[in-house]
Length: 114
Length: 110
Image (cartoon, rainbow over all chains, first blue to last red; front, side, top):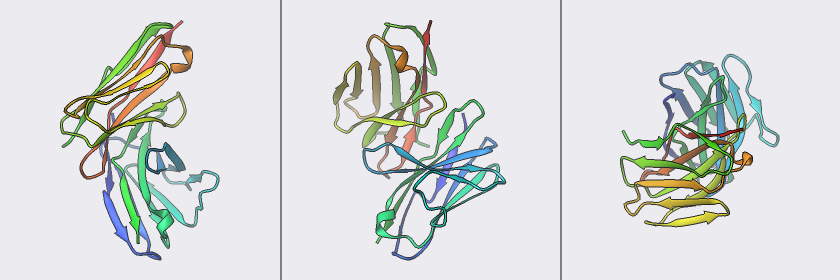
């Protein structure tokens, strides 16, 4: 399976600043990546589907201007949380999707906004 | 690096038979989570185990966390067609990162 990394693993930022989270597929060319958000003991909430070379598809209720996704290459997708607020504090997870609908997950990024 | 090995990769069972998937971590985990992903869908959180030796049940599903907090299992009794999917474990390490198992795909034979 694919090996997926995320950077940073945890980040603390001040309210109003922007934070960029990177998701890398280390050994697999990922045409599709997914970004999830998770609250404690809850399911992964799909935020958006990121397709290489095209605009991401956002789920209903997710602000695309607040959560900017860039999938510029087959191995890298980034999620930028713009003008972060404390309610954006969460655990963000990316995954790489294959044509057979399998997913390989990253280790997650813990964002804390103070 | 830290790993969570999950076996088997696939399991074919007749409807009504039992199913078990196992996860083993190279390091001690603070907790472990289990997810189910239906074909074409996204993972759905099933349960989180925190305590050493913990056993939890959800109807036909039994989840165990080992005494050393390095291994875990999910057992389904008398499988039904609705149980089809891929079951993932994900262990939380001391840095709060999730270490995912590769998943076990449950296939029900007609």
